[in-house]
Each structure stands twice: as structure tokens, then as C-alpha cells.
Length: 406
Image 1 (cartoon, rainbow, N blue to C red):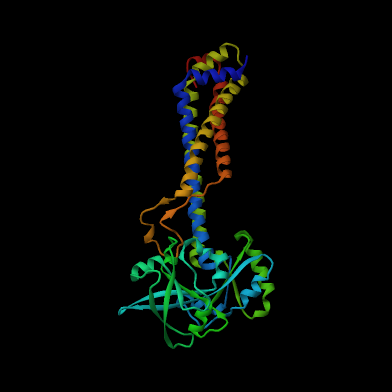
Image 2 (image 1 turned 60 degrees about the vertical axis):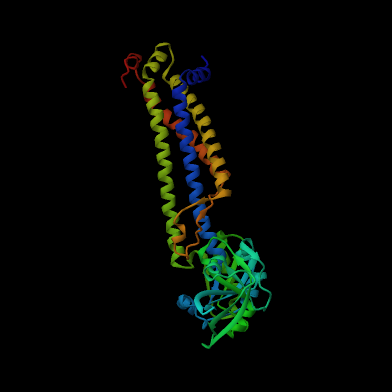
């Protein structure tokens, strides 16, 4: 007797029951794919934003600077040439020296505090890739020009081409004012970035009386997974530069430690969602097998052994699992691909502390690996959900099964 043919006939004979099974499997697979993609998107945005704009894969600073960083102190600089030394170390993709300091934008009897970052656009671009968000152009070397975040421009009522006065304290504590022309605008969606002011590193050094110095050097390697090896290589490669701290991205701040904890929490939530989806599938399949106890008794009465009955249900479960997982995978994959391009706008995200690199629009991560894993998991879960009750039912005596006794 061809059990595969009987299994296919059974599926076609009970269309409503088959449809219910397919829907439960497809929805379970689709939900898990979408949830995992969104969670990965949030994490990727947090980590990528922090690495590119704040910490690099490794940040090189004076140890004392770490203790006074919140004050944006200029008293503990590093030699900007450390970036050149770092760039020659094996595994380093880019090294960008920066000077971070605070100032006041003064215009038409109004003064507002602002954070300023001085960098060399040529060396900074491989690190932050800021040109993706730039309208206009970068600053010329040494020129009294600035690139300004879009949020700050709107707040000040300024636009590209306008001029303003930046008031600040030098490294020696004296107050100065420079008039700068706005040559570019940054609109990244990151509040931390879009509320900043950027000037050329050489100009910042001249303004602050810090020739050849920087407050930090951001180093990018080939991958964040290679950070530990990169720290060791940098420590060996520039050991003659005095006392320096080499801070990996995951230890850059308490925020990053909290983010690492959040990743664990996200993973637990993902497992819960996965378990709920599996429970829906298992519950549906158990219910379906339970409804077919009398049918199992008839099959046994017709001469089918317990093993044959079990295989019959496994064949049906395999077909349902493959078709349901395929449908759920295709729907989930298409939706995830679309959302990874268009993004998901989350109301209220703009109220989150700017130090967290999250934009109001979350871009889920599309992954073929995720799709294949979840589709495979859908098939396995369905077969397991069928095997457990079918195995028990197949062991019943035909008379018991015909009476519907489990």
C-alpha cells in the first residue's frame, strides 16, 4: 500500500483541516522571521551607530581623559600622530584623530551651547561614512568652515551658506570667538549627530591652541569580532607613544554594557516568541490527530501496522511542514526585505536619550540564513508535533481507537 499516496489523498480530502494546519505553520514561521529581523535591526543600528560615530572598534585616549570625558576636557590630549602609527598596524582599516569640545553658537543676540568635533574629512570618512548623510560638502583643510547637523540648523534658523560665531575656551582657558561659514548639513536621523557642529581638525587645533594634538583617535578594523586581536596589535604597534588607553567598542561606556545586556534580553524574548509559535503549531497538530482517532482505528482494522500508521501521519506532517514553512518563509522574507529598505517608523523614538544611537526609523535586517533556518525549524517542529500524538494513537488497540478512546 502506497502510504505517500494515501497521505496526499487525506490532505486533499479534508481541505479545511489542511488549510488550518498550513495557516498555523505559515503564520508561526512568518512571525518569528519578522520578529528576529526587527530585533537584529535594532541591535545593528545601536552597535553600528556607536562604533562609527562614538567609539570606533577601538578608541585610543589618555587614561585621565576617560575620567573627565563628560566635561569635554582639553587637558589630557594624545599626539595626533598616534593615528599614523595606528594606521600602519596590521588589521587596521582606518584611524581618525578627533578633537571634541564644547562651545556657544552666537547669532543675533542669541547664544546656545553646542558640541563641536574637529576631524580630518579624508581620514574620518572610512570611520563614520558621514558623506552618506551630507548635503553640501566637507570643510576645506584649515578653512573657517563648518558642517552642521540638521537639527541644530533648524533650532538656530540657519542654512547652508550662512555664517555664525562660535565662542569657546582654548586649552589654556582663554575665551575666543571664530566666525564660520556653513558649507554642509548632516541629516542622519541620529540625534547625537544631527545636533553637533563639525570643523576641520587643523582649524580646531589652531582655535584651541593644541597643535598636533587630539582628544581621541578612533580606529576601525576589518570586523567588530576582531576587536580583541586589534587591541593587542595596537598595544604592541604603538607602545612607544607613552601611557595610552585602548578602549574596545563594547567597553566604551556603561551604555554599551547595558546594550550587551539588552542583547541577551532580546535573545530571551526571541526564544519566547519562537516557543509560542511552536506551541501554536504543536497544539494545532495534536488537535488534528486527536480528531482522527477513529480513522486510526479503521486503518488498523484494515491491516495497517502501528509503524505504518505512524509513517502515514509523518508523511502528512512533512508535507504540511514543507508547504506551510515555504509559504511562511516566502511571506516573511518578502515583508522583511521590503521593511529592510523602507524601514519601520516608531513613534516616540525621538524622545530617547541622544547617546543611544537609535533613529525614529528602524531598518530590520534581512538574512537568507534566518529564512532557511526558520523554514527548516517549521518542518522539524511540525513533524515532532505530529509524531508525539500519532505514536501514542498508533499503539492503541483497533477497538479502542474505533470507540475514540485515547
